[in-house]
Image (cartoon, rainbow, N blue to C red; front, side):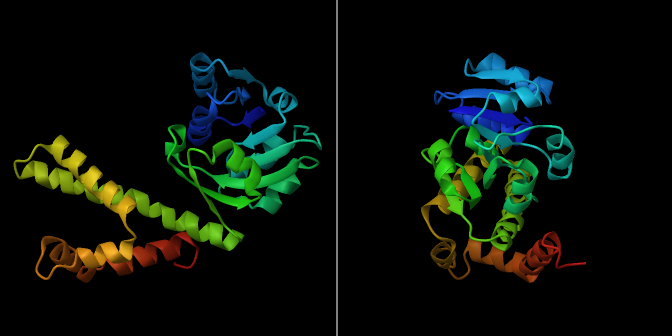
Length: 244
């Protein structure tokens, strides 16, 4: 396919990296010269151009812009009716994107994550899954969402990643302070948590780790009693606009 990327931030760059070897002709925005230049130097399939030329050279346009900047940037560009548009913009509904890119067709809002560069990443999707599956579905797992409200809920819930990483990082620091090899402790904990989450649903796993008096039960109860669950829910409510 002829694919153009308007905006080449961190996530858009990871998306480009994930499909650069798939035989597509990819044109990327000069908007972030350092990232676009690095991509073009690394992949023969990638060329750099100004935003309008990116659009002119493409049948599929991917928007890697900040939602609050999209109207200003796209307002000075002309898209074609035969083009399909995928938006990577969190916070912009499919209907809002459709208004911005007319007469082109807004196909989907797609929320990828950095691991898409290597594959094996989740992708949140609102809209028509066909094109996104064709481009990204072989190496990644697509979660099709039926409403903007559902997408918003997933977007808030995915923020649990950073606190989870902080817990692992802090536990590795603690182990290091107790005489363990800090790097080895982190590697062990990353593998333990990652493999466990991929290997089982959370309910059965929690039950399996509920040995009375065991390390897992004791630490979990300590953290729940200290307010972990309530604090998490309050934080998610705040992200969703339900908190103060």
